[in-house]
Image (cartoon, rainbow, N blue to C red; front, side, top):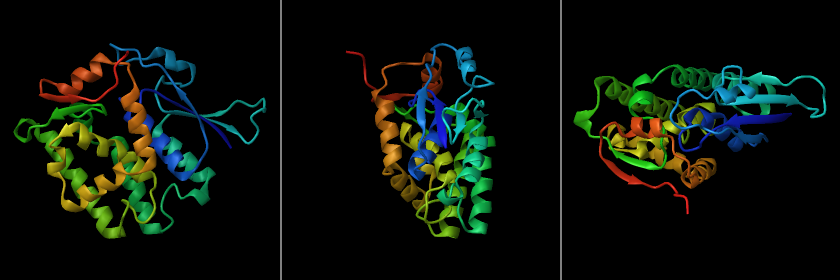
Length: 247
């Protein structure tokens, strides 16, 4: 199979990270295409060139023959990308092989895809920043999301024995929660909401080669998106900015 994966800024785009990390860790080759993120707007109409909804990520499946005149299969939602990869590569264990673990992993992946709205709103992806997340200053909706993350991670790790959320192999559910792991680093104090087992999972995820590669490239970006930066800080104390600056 020949895949072209369209993503955007590694510092800001949590959705881009999910299929990128999964494909990288499972050894599914792809060509990466990084689309420009225009600052000052949440709309990126130029992405329409590769995505029907002008969204990232977007996967183009060229098939086994890159020279084929047939148009590529286009998948413009992250969860659709994952399901497509699971069908195309049953040997790669996009989801766990065991039936119970697979059912749980699919459900948790879908929950991450559809839920956690307060976390997305109040703890947006911004890998290079360190922001003080004061416990008494967060909304009840965000507190509920943080408690749910801990509950879900604790359940998966305990039920399937770790070291990953659904057992012995890193699968789609880990890739989908990887941006949440990175949010616990951006928002200082977020880890206080996690139990010891979940904190151990954070430490393991931060040592995954694909996660380290993504973070390194994110910190090397010199572009800034003002709306995302403002949403990340939201009047809270900025403790550090680890991002590269233009020379």
